Length: 150
Image (cartoon, rainbow, N blue to C red; front, side):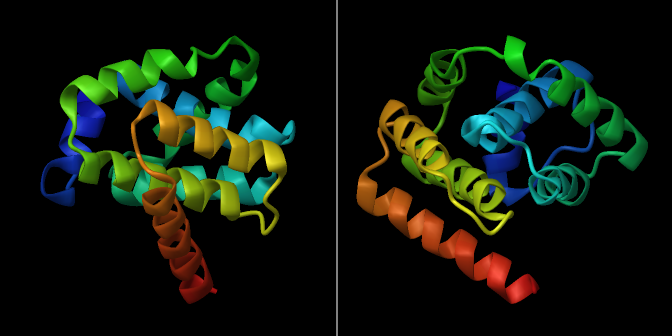
């Protein structure tokens, strides 16, 4: 996961060769965000799929396979601390804010923000040492991207 995030944040580009294990971890974090309200909506899975295909330049068939596996294993996910402790050691605040923005976009993609979803983003922001102001601004940018894509 760290290699994916490192490549993602360096010059806002993704390396073309991402290992399946790293992609599975990132997909797991995205599924965790989508499932925080207890339901993974079609819009949320489509947004995760499009992020992985468009941003990470992964093959659609591979993304479908990994996404289905992550959904199946959603109850066996790693703790948030597992993800955030590694991210905090390696990334600047700007890079962590970009991650929060991507997660907001996934959570907002179904048009409904459940209190558990916003709570998860707040917890992640706290674990990543991102202020409420920066998290709120990331949410606004995600909302703008979603509304511009409609």
